[in-house]
Image 1 (spheres, one colour):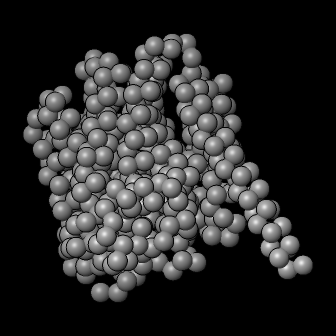
Image 2: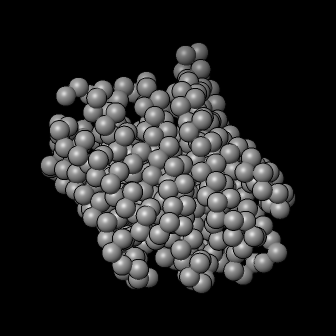
Length: 398
């Protein structure tokens, strides 16, 4: 089976995974809101998926090096299918919490395997393009997810049944693909612990981890907290279901162009601009949050600008790390994403509950604004370092 065909199978699976995630967050948020569950408890429940990501992360690198990437993806996909199926069998706050946790474990196994496969087998000059295609397919699935969530009006089990069937189809398509192994430095892999490699990744690529962190915060807040905020403003379930995919659709539109631009101009520069511009967009959404279509336009624009921050961060990580550290880098990217996703709904839920008469988008704007400032400081320091190196090089030649 050709590498090209395997690549498209991988991104297809990621699209289906995105669909299940995009469905799960708003579907459960709307069900719990209708059942009278408070927004803060709703937000805490949403963290189960990301706790699953955190718990499984330390145990993925060694098995992937020993058994290859395919077994990790296959087992992860199977766990997601089984968990989604059991959502249809019961309605219980704590049982659903456990099932969300298991979906997080399975999804992370799937994503780490596919991300490592793509970043280790792609041409370095086309990393931005390849990773952005990965992001586009995840975004397409994630954008369709809230529409699937709206089928909850036909029965609590409906979105879970459809998602289970689609995940099963993707999983079956994966089975004929050949196994592959991540690049390894034999001496370092044998002599160093996973913790030591994670420490190296953080030291070399901490700035790149902010991309997945930001995407985790945004994805979870917009899909877990925004439905609650919008329903309390009096918007209908159909209006909320139409609003939520706008961010993901915006990311789909610009994901590949931004990936190509990042190959040309540098991912650090593109990420700095995306964080800065999106801060202003969320401020605009906060000012005009009484107007549905203005909020919709802001969500679409924000997606076009910052909806690629996960894939850009992943590509930036590939630029900063040696290849044998990429599996650890991909795992830490998942951890950063999950930390953001745990923090986002909790902060958003508390903000909605405690800080009334203030737009929900103010909370989003503050978080993204802080990250924008961090990137500006990083770029300023990088520019100063290059200037010093240039002067030293000039002095040596004279």
